[in-house]
Length: 251
Ligand code: FPP
Image (tube, rainbow, N blue to C red):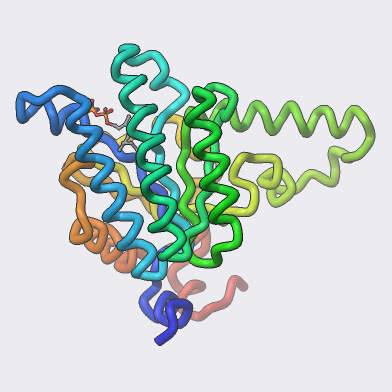
């Protein structure tokens, strides 16, 4: 079976988004410094990216650093930026081997120059790949994204290139950082927290939500499969009734 055929047959989510949480608690419970949790978290990122791509997931979006995370202790922020830069530099060859297209969303101008340049390089080098799209959300906040989109829409209306009545959900989506990505089908959050935390507020409107108590450094291929099978057992109705879904008709 080709990946596309098996994806439909198995009802695989096309787009999985993940809030990777619990690195600090993982480290604390082992009396280790928080950065050790982030380091172990990077290993999980590697495994989950590879497994998702092998399974035929088309889009994987990882919340790696929120706009609010800049308020963490300076040493932790610095270590996270260093880890990120190392990850990008080391993973590009593997992304090329796995035909993965790399993408970033968030506020690029907040990032240190060396990190921003490494991200630009990874994007450019992998831009022709046609397999899974891996998106890292970095210095990302969904309310800011919605505000930015609203400002740009207002500016286009003011200069006359857009009429208010022409604004549809689809057109609105095209003003978001995620333009070109389908909405996530499945959101996974680790570490037992049951919040969305300013992540993809518009895009998650119809996503299935999956919460697990496992901390991100302990999340693994098996836990990913559990989340996917849970998704497969759910009936997505998009506001319709079960009968309508079963008969394949919305009338
Ligand atoms: C949440 O754990 C995790 C983060 C804020 C950062 C996620 C970063 C990584 C997994 C490593 C770097 C990422 C990439 C893509 C290379 P937390 O620190 O909030 O944990 P806590 O809530 O237990 O304190």
